[in-house]
Image (cartoon, rainbow, N blue to C red; front, side):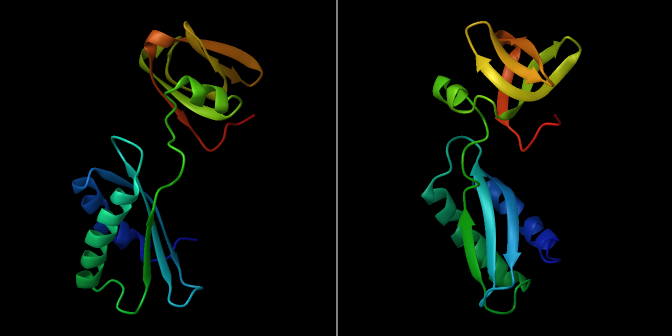
Length: 155
């Protein structure tokens, strides 16, 4: 269950992140700790998220939170990266994430779909190949605009 302060915190944090070239991915307020911990995950929209990105977001968001009055009591602010970039681009990533659920977005519809969700089989010179419920689908590589890891695929 989401803490009731998360929506107004996201409303405050999202435009700040955008000004810094970042995106707020998630926020959690852990009130079972003393002092409570507000953790905000951010992602750099242009490159891998760096420690510098987290530090810049921390400084600006902390000042905004302090003046907003949303959190009048003591708290700890943690800014972090959500982890592995969710976009696959390199050959190494396509090999490492074989079998993982992915979302493939195409520049134009292919076989009636502009997005495909399935388990990654492989990427080769011709296509990105997905397993869709036991059936392999080959999406021409020149049509693929993005391949992203996703949380799950219905089996």
